[in-house]
Amino acid sequence: MLIGLLGFQGAIEEHEMILASLGADSIRVKKASELIALDGLLFPGGESTTMLKMLEFSNLLDPLQSVLSHGLPVMATCAGLILLAKKTTSPIQKSLGQLDITVKRNGYGPQYFSFCEEVSIESFEKTFRAVFIRAPIILSTGPSVQVMARDHHGHPVFVRSGRQFGLTFHPELTQDDRIHRFFLNQIKKNSRRELCQDIQNGIT
Amino acid sequence: MNNDLIVTNRGLAQMLKGGVIMDVTNAEQALIAEKAGAVAVMALERVPADIRAAGGVARMCDPLKVKEIQAAVTIPVMAKCRIGHIMEARILEALKVDYIDESEVLTPADEENHVDKSQFKVPFVCGCRNLGEALRRIAEGASMIRTKGEAGTGNVVEAVRHMRKVQSEIRKVASMAEEELFTEAKNLQVPYTLLLEVRQLKRLPVVNFAAGGVATPADAALMMLLGADGVFVGSGIFKSTDPAVRAKAIVESVSHWDDPSILATVSEGIGEAMKGLDIHLIAETDRLASRGQ
Image (cartoon, rainbow over all chains, first blue to last red; front, side, top):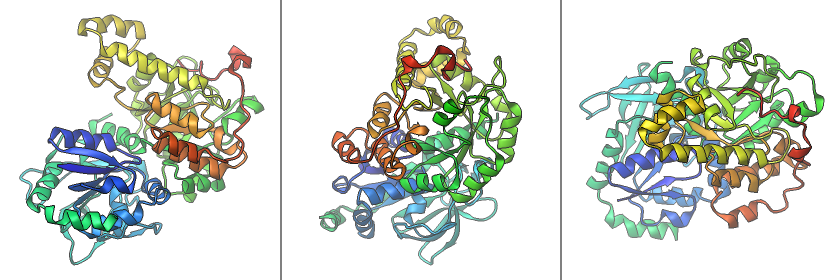
């Protein structure tokens, strides 16, 4: 299985190490030609404004939108989720407009208010120690979006819509690989071999 | 520091990896930095080149300036306190800056002790010239490390020296037998447990950026090649002839540091770099890097 990690900036290595430990290969995606033959995409945490600039500088917004619209599975964490969201606030920022949620950037405030907490995730047997760093807050979710976990305020922190998974916290900063495992299993379950050709046609 | 705080504070630095942190002295510059793709800005009264030129005592910047910059951008805002100046650090914490740089660029307030950074909720970044300095700062609670380089010179030679030194010392420790670490810890004047961690990880336990003298996209890419996780640019941007263009070029060069053809493109026609200083013409007493060992 080959996962493409958006490779411009952020906590990339951390995801790579977990994926490798689970037997999945990964490559860093910085140009459109690197979107071919992927089984899934992963958007890491980092600075969403910086990643967005790099996507624009590298003309990667349209190719990404294309593969995501064609159903390539994606997991997006923190800043990555801001890129994947349909709408962002404070302030409004361009995005890929995929996952039907409205995200408030830096929702909990500056670094001083970053925190960790146990969250219960649907279908997970035990709670997950979630690390929130200058995290966004999901203000609202569209009808297609399923909330898989919430923080102590009741804000959604883990959502899914079909093959798209979004988290406001950082599973790559813990020793717990259950969320990555879950994502890889979902890809396997919805084997998308039949989609490969469509996706590649989408890019080229 | 409890474990959660270590994870979130070191974690923020992990989110900055592959990025450029830029020195800014007002909201206008902060917006230029953000627009160019900076991952964070460092709020300062003056950039290091001007601190060097002005002489006198360099201190924490006016809180009003920090607030102005915080209001202008959404990326993290860092600010500098003097080495050992616990109260400047407390003031910056009260201002809720995202990172405090306990920096040799400002005039040290304490020539014996650094701030006990483990007593703060806000994370700290500190400069180093070698593995010993890096691990002493981490032992004091620093959540991120950067090379000192020689700030305000536009000359990357000291940053290169410091990054090479840290990396080669890490390689040495990584190849040592476990029982040799006790003596090495004594030699480096660092806690044994941290040295053990370096040996296992084959890297520092926190993110390590390059800083001090980066002036061109090629300088930034060179620091990445030498093992930096990201780059601080101080005077290099706003002392050049076209800051917005140079800022964007340096951001792209850090992301694409291993692709010389992209580096060639982004280095094209970006105006003149800051003039810069020959290190050998700076008196030993005027060098900032020797402050705070």
